[in-house]
Image (cartoon, rainbow, N blue to C red; front, side, top):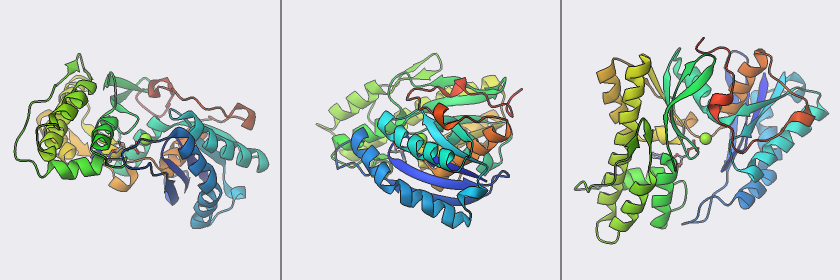
Length: 327
Ligand code: AMP
Ligand code: MG
């Protein structure tokens, strides 16, 4: 069993996962930003420090296990907000040191992808990773997840969150923007920016905010969602055609968006691929993504001492060796 600790952004979470991939516990506590505001890193890290002891204790209790039974302690080492990452790292280092358990630093983005692969039983997928921190299309080659398209500026999660916050909503705003879009009566043109196989969302955001001065918010939300999802689908389709992968996974919080699933379903239909979407409960930030990838890395020989348990605010997912993938 491996204990995993997640603390990259809004959520502090802990989970115990077995080496075979059984999720034995999953405990979360999320910091809520005030309405109209984004995550304040210092406030979020205070929240994490307050809830950490009870979240970790409950994760072990729910799993019916003690620290002595953990083979390793995995933690999200990045990418993420520095103050938030440091809380998870300090908790993991303390447990590792006190109980003499190896520490496994985990890349949060690879955690999203590997958990989605576990839950969907995908064997060799392309993956659309869409979250607050990422917008990327990746596929495994040569023991790493490689980029086949990504955002050049803000992520698609930030696009919906910043649009929603402009309307005075509380982050994360994706579900509210999706609900708002369902009340639309017309499509309004929004800048569509695909460069090579990369996307840019900041122009669409600026334009959508301006449209709100003269158009119904439902129509603007719908137009923004349609345009952003279409950009993602164009780049995903090109990546699928190029890599010839026959499975397409969606991972990250935006995977919960039903319109995205429908549009990607059309992409898969055209490319002869199977769409594999994990249970929405595990799409966003959670402990199992860290515990499961930690378990896989640990069985591949990855671990470090408490003194080496650093955090890396910027850590690209294609820097991580995943020996069980794409040889
Ligand atoms: P994560 O960073 O993986 O926890 O994902 C959080 C992001 O997913 C936030 O930016 C949310 O606004 C976004 N999100 C969650 N649900 C939806 C949805 N139904 N539609 C669009 N975005 C969503
Ligand atoms: Mg995430």
